Length: 142
Ligand SMILES: [Zn+2]
Image 1 (tube, rainbow, N blue to C red):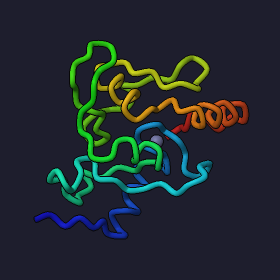
Image 2 (image 1 turned 30 degrees about the vertical axis):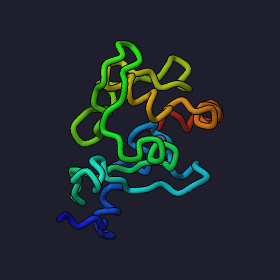
Image 3 (image 1 turned 90 degrees about the vertical axis):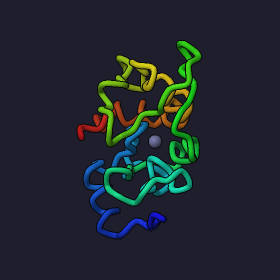
Image 4 (image 1 turned 180 degrees about the vertical axis):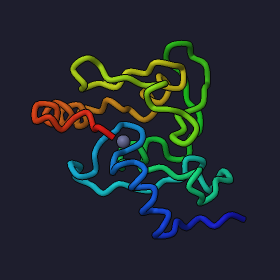
């Protein structure tokens, strides 16, 4: 049985490693209305452990939409594919910013499925990205 609790040291390392950004939608916690969570990428209910290799920093919107999912439909093909795994995949391999930096584009089946499942272009996020971009605060540099 794995230990589901995340230690204060692990939490601090996850936040540092993520530069305070959601590792899915790249929202910055310092500009977010709600606190972010340290989430288990493979959920505890599916055997995920509380190790740095299975922990990611996530905004509430992404965390709630991902919930216990590990897979989703690729809207490009209809195939079931793995969701983006922040410890095993590179964000820039699977996603890119639209030219005005308000939309996340899925570049691969994993990227497209994750954009769709986690709704990485939620209207609140897009509006916030637009404002932050105008002030030179988006996209995050980390
Ligand atoms: Zn997010």
